Each structure stands twice: as C-alpha cells, then as structure tokens.
Length: 314
Ligand code: AVJ
Image (cartoon, rainbow, N blue to C red; front, side):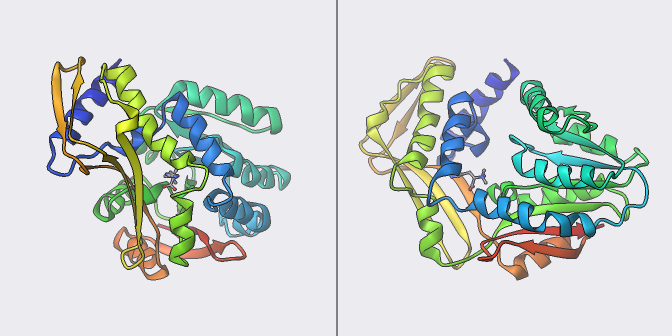
C-alpha cells in the first residue's frame, strides 16, 4: 500500500512538471517484469547476452581478480533473476571459497523467489537476503567486518541522470571499507544504429513495455488512459550517450485519475519521459570511478566490446 502511495505522489509530481515524466522504476509491475523478460530475448537487445557472455567467458578471471584471503560477502544491488550472478557464484563455489551471497531488494517476494531459484541450482550456497531500501541497508553493512564484493550489474546504473549516478555510487562507496570491491555493469557507446535498434525493436515489445505504464496507472490509480492515443518514441543521442524513451500523446486529451481526483492535460504531441538508458565511454567510466573515490582494478568486456563489467576498488 505504501507502494501505491508513492506511485500516486510520484505520478502527480511527474505530471505537474513542465517536462512530464514517469520514474522508470514503475516499469516493473508483474506485467512489466514479464515484458522485460521478453525484451532480454529480443534479437536487437544485445545487453543481456553481452553481459552473460562476460560472466561465462571471463567469470574465472573475475574471481581471479578478487584479493580476499578470508571469508567474504557478495552483496548484490538489484539482483533481478540472478542468472548472471549464478555463473559467478558457481565459480566461487567450485573453488571452495568461503563466502555468503547477500542479494538486496525492496521486495521480500522477489528475494524469496531468487533464493529458491539459486538454491535449486547451487544447493551448497550460503545465501542471506537483505530486504529493504538501499538507503537503510547500505549504511548497516559498513560495520560488518567481512570484506565485500558489491555487484551492481545489468547497466542499471544507466537509468540515472549523471549527477544521480554519481550520488548513488557515492552512497555505495560510503558503505564500503577500504579494500572492498564494486563490480559495475555498464553498456558501452558503440555504433549508434545498434543502440537505436535495441530500444526500438521491430516486434514492438519495448513499445508494450512503455505502454504498460499507462495500463498500470489505469489499474492502480484509477486513470482512464486510452492506450491507442499514445505512442512510444525513443531516441539515441550518440554525442552524450543518452537513449531517452517517451510516450507521445497523439491528440490533445484530458486524463482523469480517481486516486487523486485530479485530471491532467496532454497536448497533441506532448512527450512523457519514461526512461534514460545511458551508454558510457571509457573516459566517463574512469571519471565516475575517480570522482567517487575508486580505482579501476580491472575491466571485463565481451568479444564485441559492447558491454563492460568494471571492477573497482575502494
Ligand atoms: C534494465 C535499465 C538496464 O535501460 O536497457 C530495456 C531497461 N528499457 N529496454 C535498459 C530497458 C528498455 C534496461 N535496464
């Protein structure tokens, strides 16, 4: 219920802003999770496959790069379904390393499923879930004496505006001790046409992913969006490395929300911003690490150099 309260407040704030926006975390209701699974299978959406390749082919080298001599913890932020992480954990178990896997998520349901999944394939894994939001959990980790490997994979960092990304990494850094590591997955700048296609697939799955936001507002906030009166649009700016995604209002229309007994006007061709998906250059990655007090220990890329998992040391 508190979730719904935030949704309402966030939508109100987003629609009262001069550039209307919906925070991208609201993509992921049950239907959105399913559509995102489909996105990951799309021929155009290379990100998931590239990062999976890194874990499959370089997982051993990633584990080699860990300097821990004693029992350690693997703390994952935004674990998702954990399939990539599984490859890494498997390699650590194979080497009989002494560690606990601690996936962090706001949702106990998600964590319960993840735990069951992990234990199915890795029955000897020590797993201890951390339920709650980052702001509350992260500070509590600093007092734990074990060295830690933090994971923030899947280019989730790309959803933040540059200043927010820096603040978020800084928050992680503040909860780390000297010698702890952070492995960040980032999508790299590449041929712009490839990036454009990844966010505007032929089958229209990404469009459905965005239109699902309207369905969600209809269902959870009692809105009366007509889904045919909006269209998905995305654009890649290769100079800045920004993919911006939008819903376009095809006509002048007024949408009523019973949850707040309020209406919002959408002009013809007005845009609702739904997501930023940043693509990084090597220099941007170095700068982000430096500015947040890290040194880049090692970088792991796929064969085509589409994606990087960058290992940072505090
Ligand atoms: C899950 C945030 C990494 O930005 O590429 C996929 C979400 N949006 N297609 C991304 C997404 C449109 C994805 N992340």
